[in-house]
Length: 162
Image 1 (cartoon, rainbow, N blue to C red):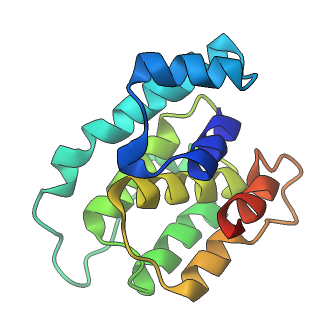
Image 2: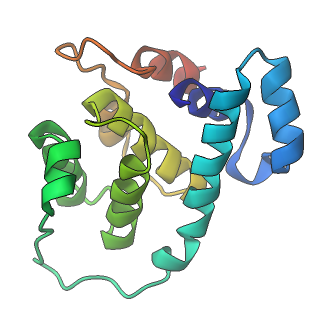
């Protein structure tokens, strides 16, 4: 499914993505499996549903995000630290952070790797057309060398720099 997200970054603007039925056919023609396509379309549909959350009022300055037990288990310290890093460097607001966390937890993985989280961050930023500083973008594109299962992270640099 992560490979499909990378494919979408490479081939479509957020507002230029075809309707789900057409997109499914195009993804199938590109060689993606039907299960992955179905999972990706469902995941993207959930991302579109976060538009309402983006309109909610922002948290107070200096507020702290407390992760519940499931979030802590599925988002290791490196992921939670990266989300905090993004907030501290004004790369996202509270609704954007919550959309990232919600979409990360929507993956079937028991534990989300940092590279997969970076793809999710890019997907959320891509979907909402959120402006990102060049140094933050560089950090998003950096591979996590300690992560054996990069989950497509190695393709992100190639995709977004083309």
